[in-house]
Length: 121
Image 1 (cartoon, rainbow, N blue to C red):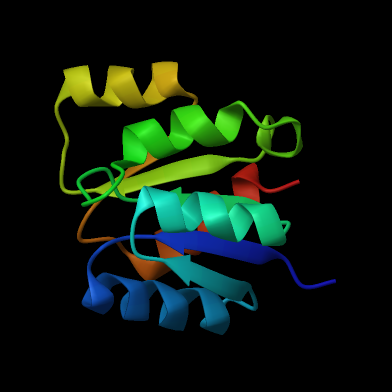
Image 2 (tube, rainbow, N blue to C red):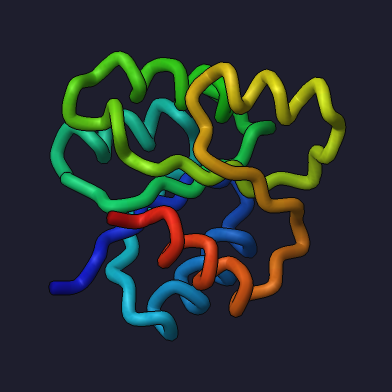
């Protein structure tokens, strides 16, 4: 069965790069451009892994993670933060919000697929 990944990023270029890498890796991809869109997509879809940016308009990635963790069906869904941020304080903020892992942009598609396979059930 094909695993489904939700990617949330306000950069159209990043969404395209993620979609290409994930589809090459055999994943089905759904995409949102901010945290609120991500939450709306999660209402209608079940996903195996979520990849989100932090700095986005409307709803940032940290708030998005906190909100999705409140929903029983997304309590255990692996969430990877994909961002240009690399400060320890941001990483801790992400972890305490409920993030599973942290990947710094620009990402290596092979490593990204490796991490997704490692965290997805």
